[in-house]
Figure 1: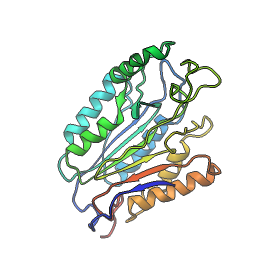
Figure 2: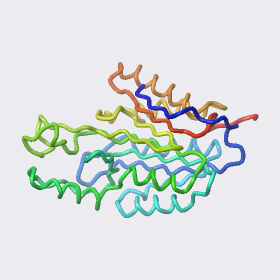
Figure 3: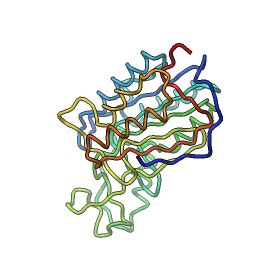
Figure 4: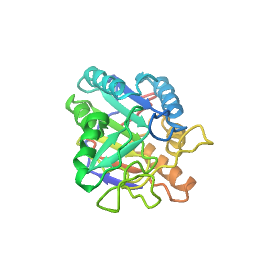
Length: 267
């Protein structure tokens, strides 16, 4: 498991009466990029399980276009109160550009064929038509939740090559296209997990109902009185075993508290 941890967290006794809020988004039917099989199924199943263990869920199949996703994210951010437990999940296409991760909505436009002189055009398209993941994380944290759990399962193909790795052109359909997947993310008070390591990609499983990461997350997420870090360690081990170590989830832990239980029973 690729693992990053901050200084030792302070002890704390689970969630108690704290509200638990989750925003869950999964996008399958992209207009200008390959359609995906798993994200919507993943989002629906995760929403159901989280609701069963006490989360207030904001999950809607309508949150697919840029305007809809932005609206959902804003509404979710405004609903957060200090000391809430907050979980954000996105499944779909994602892209890194200049060390920033962008979540791609259903209507994200196809990149034009451009040359190195037009790199600013790429940045402009991303800033105007995609959702910056770090901006979401920062805004969630600004609401002063007890903990922010930020899960991304969204790097599924070579959407855009990284010119620092290959400067022969920018057509993502060429056979020698390169990209760096998502960039590592960190935030005080947050636990951040990617379905695969920074700089690598997830294989969308067309024959399976759920992604490999979600398959194992669903298996463990309702484990009673289990710390979320241990849950994600078990998820990581399952993903690595099933993929023969080809897919390695990434986990960044900067939690302020110990004993973060998603499913608390009899305590």
